[in-house]
Image 1: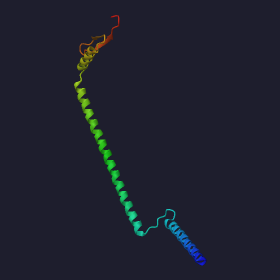
Image 2 (image 1 turned 135 degrees about the vertical axis):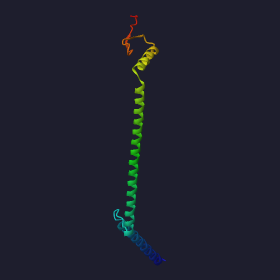
Image 3 (image 1 turned 30 degrees about the vertical axis):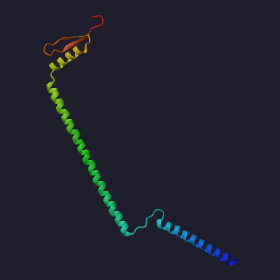
Image 4 (image 1 turned 60 degrees about the vertical axis):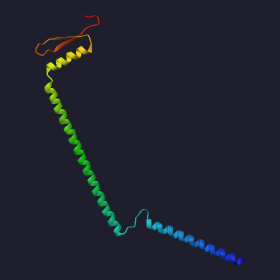
Length: 138
């Protein structure tokens, strides 16, 4: 019975040693395969990576062209808005006469309810000289 145990112990030790060696071999082979982040490629993989990089670059170029087109369209929109504002200002300037402005000024004075007196000084323009009364009525 003792002999059987010794053989069994030796067999167990040999199996453990063998497993230890296999584990070490796997670790060493993984270390060499990875090689500190260095990928081991075949030439086909390198070619596929180069083709993918060309495709990615083409996509980036198209994206940049789209961004340029969008910027041009936004600039055109701003230009058209500015043209519209300028035309509106020109129309307003054509319809605003000094007489109309004086009329609007007098109406604003009436609606304000302030104690203001206006005296027309020039009969051709009707522009008033504005003075305010004191609280005492002077």
